[in-house]
Image (tube, rainbow, N blue to C red; front, top):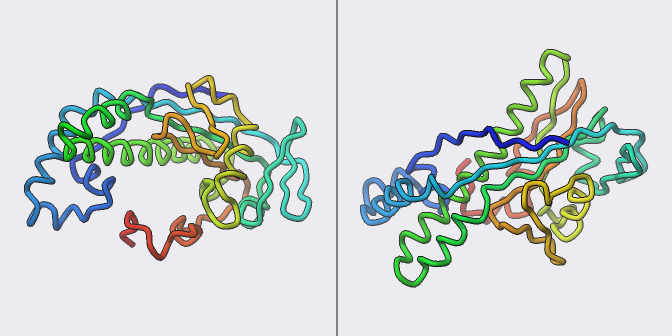
Amino acid sequence: MTVITDLHLSLSTDDILRGQGLNSELIHVRKPALLAAAKRAYSRGLSLIHPKALTREIAVLARRHDRILLKDGLSLSSPVVMRHLGGALRVVASICTIGQELEESVTNLLESDPQLALALDGLGNAAVEMLAQQVCADIGKKLQDRGLKVSTPLSPGSLEWPVEIGQPQIFSLLEPARVGIKLTTGGMMIPKKSISFVLGIGYEMAQSDMCEICSLKETCRYRYA
């Protein structure tokens, strides 16, 4: 199990706008107040982000229907997990977070400066998404020399792998307290600006569009494709 703290996120004001579910090109032209708030959030919020990640690579022992059996008596169970990770030789589980400080700042600013609070929240969304992408990319690079590939990362939240089922499965593979993350009985992570995922390692792993897997693909305001 590995704790990763040496992480640098190259964020921009456009990332903040997209993290709010906004079209950054339109905001630049039509909404100067929102753009100004994003710039303030950029100046104020970067110091509030403390990225950390926890990863663990685990050998796959067998497959049983919709269940992937892992070393040490662990397992993952879901039709969508089996479809995308069923051919894996090993599985990587990961939890990433940017910590609690930015979240607390958003809460404190909601009444006095709601526009800045929302922009900071967008910064948090963008930061944790970029953090997960960076962790996935680093895993893929390390495996290239071994001739191995990684699958699309899967996070709980689809109809076939709901949060209340998927999150406890991922948490059972890790020691989340090592990066300061807890899980509520309803499957919510604390700090909220955290993300969990699993990916497969093998010789023939496929990459899929995550938006096509998600149950919210038709209504999600963060989708631009």
